[in-house]
Length: 455
Image (tube, rainbow, N blue to C red; front, side, top):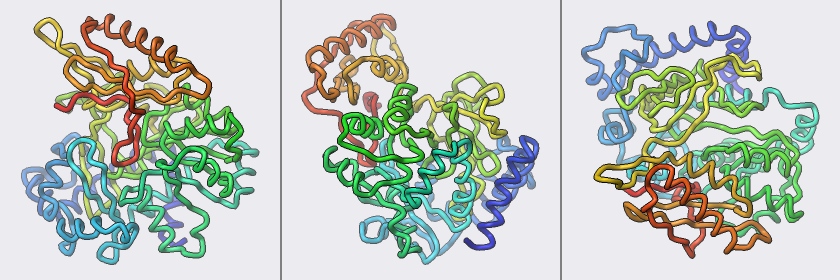
């Protein structure tokens, strides 16, 4: 660990001790620095901020940005003139270069393009160091037994991840192995594309002390552990990439007898928030600004779900992310979290773009994806599900049954429950189809549980 990394780690601990006031003070100062740096070194931001006064430490005074606008101006957006979109595309086109230092300095990661636009994002050394510093907060509240199991596994971390590619988790792990070849055994990825028996066998051989992956896949692995085909004993399980439901969290915790923590991260910012034992995500607000807003980008008060959320990454200099529309629905906890953390607590509700809309009576009916998710989570016999809006008034339901479950009985129950939900929203005319194919993964490896019609 370098002196700079040690300094960042000390400051991260100090920020928590100083409480909300110390965290807010750091956030204001770092936002002002990030805005000034972007203005001085990014032609895009210099143009965007030309009418704004100097010394801004209030994010509400900044215009909103987004992936489409930034990717369209990539070469003007970045602050390093040696970085161009053409060079970045050349690197990500070569799978052999995953984790390689781009221009000798940067980690490159791509988004899967679920929203229709593939993003290419860079992290500089400062951003990676900040991520490591605040990442230690994920272990807060672990018991003695959990820590013993973490140490017993010699720090081996298993990441059940997407297929090979320049996705952030895969690229980050590859970078670690390139930088620390003798410690490569401490961090290993396991492909979600492998059959469950083969995946379980590989994890049994590896014996990880911590396990991380998509929430849905961890739920499937919990089933393997319950069935006795998987027998690992991680001290901590970290679920990310997808919403972690209370039911799935309880099943994973029971199967592995381990603390389960959720993580909120994005390719644009890998250290957004870490979960606590009370299933709230604590935003690293000393290095992140997260603004819940309505459809017109006006602030939404705590306790009320937002339409979207605006992100400002205060660590990354090479590719400034300032008031960036994430598209996530979040709810900010209005009171102090029982875990005692002074960091603001949020829950991620879903994505605004995933609202399902059906024609009804000359107008439209909109239903949140969370309504379907919480409903089907309660149906016994389902290992995994996916609801696809294949036409304006058609839902195609993909199911993977749990071991021993009767497929026909599970489908009848699912059909009854979804039909009741649709009727409650006056969308009883929507047709339900039983799919022959199982739930499918996106390019980035996620199982999107609810897939709306492309609009």
